[in-house]
Length: 436
Ligand code: SDX
Image (cartoon, rainbow, N blue to C red; front, top):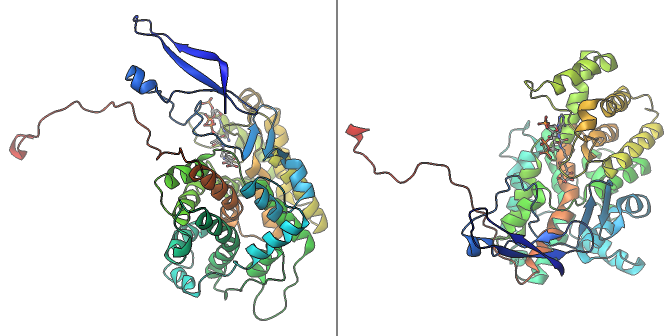
């Protein structure tokens, strides 16, 4: 980061000493005011619950312009990556900083492919769960459990360990998600097949059975690969910040990524794709398009906790570029599958149109986000609704581990330890129980 000539001066109306704070500029986006010395100089903290105005780190991985609705992975627009690259090229980009050439792509693909199997012992973890366990409950357990197997890549301070842990996590997430799914439907696990693509291998592990050959549909393979690209990274969102904070204690990468899985599960975050599809089902069941008005009324009613799931975003105050690409993928996949009249897709587009013309949403700059359409295309691919967020976690693992490795790779990083504004009881003495 580059120091700006402009400084920030903090002055106090009670005549307290002014404080001068340096301002730094990045390549793009808002400048930052460096407050690291503020507490030492003033004895005061800044106050920013929810981090509405806080940059927690410097990063070179993903840039978002919320007003323009722009998303760049290492400088490349998401629209170009989603149409010209595949997920493994995007993983190489996020991890190492640039797209691979043909030879690098072959080497990287082979490296990931050769790490897709999980230790045979891992299957015994699943037996402890009920068959109707939510896949994200299983994934939170399985990802954390990986640290019990890969002791040769748990020293986060060792760059070689960091790299092999990254490859293992990217390679094994599809295998673990498919196992979580097979467990819930009582079918045997399918082993990875090294002659399939990353997305094709996932489809095979999900939908093949030992009883007959399973042919991977190129349409579904491409759609899934694009879904993975769209979910790969997204700056300092809640789950990425969780991974960074968790990893800042020096814990192993598998434990830090498990923390990210747990955070992503929430309906305000990655759990929104499952919630958005269930919302569409509910409107459909209640009567479909003609019931949209009633639903929107509920959303606008402050006393109801009903939200339009898949809408709104902390950063995007314009259309989420991923939602546009997801809608396009929806149209393509439904068209290829002869489902262009899919009622849920039509309902989603009608709901979006009505919301985008409604003052409540316009005034709050609420637009569809990545989760609004992703459920419809995943459902068309045959992914069960409860697995949507696990697919999001599968795709986001590369972003999480790239961000974690970027932080740990910076020799100046410190353990994250925020402070608070204390509003509890002042000091008091314990009374004997007879006097309480
Ligand atoms: C993801 O951060 C990331 O980058 C996340 C993500 C990623 O790739 O990692 O992009 C993935 O998590 C996408 C977001 C998925 N979540 C949802 O779709 C759930 C529904 N959306 C909301 O919960 C909400 O929009 C958030 C959580 C996404 C953002 O919330 P903010 O930034 O804290 O905004 P807010 O709650 O303060 O909302 C501002 C106003 C409020 O109304 P007022 O109090 O001003 O009257 O907008 C309203 C909110 O009530 N509002 C909504 C709404 N989202 C915000 N009202 C109805 N429906 C919604 N979806």
